[in-house]
Length: 178
Image (cartoon, rainbow, N blue to C red; front, side, top):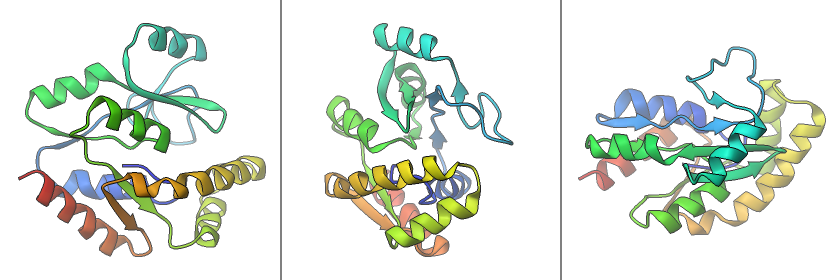
């Protein structure tokens, strides 16, 4: 699952994990600093740039991407261990990473979460009060590029109503997990 920053991926992920049996979340690694209230190993694994680069060179990532001046990635071992247990694994990742997953795992189902409008996305980013104005502008600039790639996905959900978007996500999982 991916989409622009501020589109509500995290909230939809939480709803999905509560309501979809045998669905697990793969925690991504990142070089960015934790936000207030974030805990290492819960929202992300927070690691140094040097460690991240070393893990890239060792081929440990299923996907990784440079996003908003930081690096994000999903460890292959995390996904493989859950798949081997018969679980469905939800990745909440950047568009670059999702396209890498598609290349390496063609059976993966890609879900794009879209905002109702760019203005609505700007409002969400401003209202969450986690980023500087410069970072918000960078996120909005990147969002325009990401929105152009939504046709690469199997499903697109416009998150303008949380209950509706959650139901659509559940329907996708119900249909694909059969």
